Length: 125
Image (cartoon, rainbow, N blue to C red; front, side):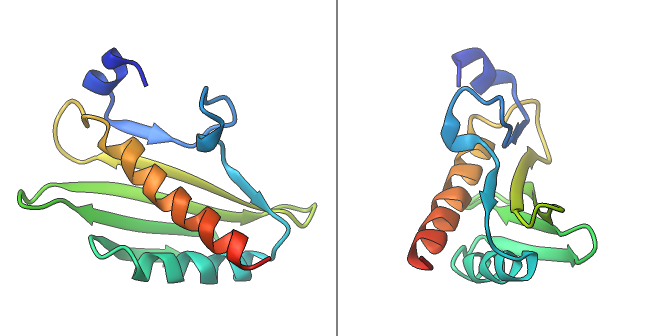
């Protein structure tokens, strides 16, 4: 992330075009139900992350991450969608609620989640 992006971005999204391949959406040869169960397990390990809602049909987790010691929040959406090809994809969006910039926080939020997701998926093999 460039210094300019670090100062001006309020959102970070996993995207197949991201310069850093680590931030590409994930794809797994697992059912949506299996991946959803893993995401639920990961959320239990992230104490500052609070699940606000899960919409089964959309495969969308709506999460709030509270920062301390200040009461600021980041919104995180995790989408788990199974395609017709049987591959389940995971995409993540992190957005700051307040302010004109996130100081790289959303990218760090995504990195933390994706590291745990990769770890869970590698354990499962």
